[in-house]
Length: 55
Image (tube, rainbow, N blue to C red):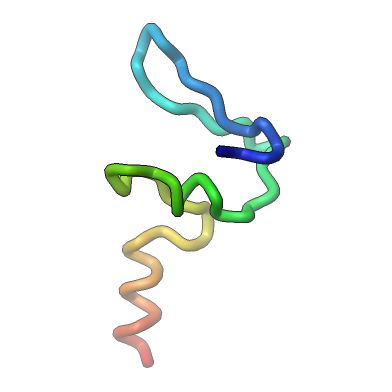
């Protein structure tokens, strides 16, 4: 899903990893994640909820 090849899968640990040097922060991986486990740095769910409460 990542146009910048910033994500890969560690098959031993069965987890996705992000190479932060390649990540451009577009959020395509977050939108494509089927179980909602992926979060974009700076836009984590807790941060967004805190912003909404502050408003």
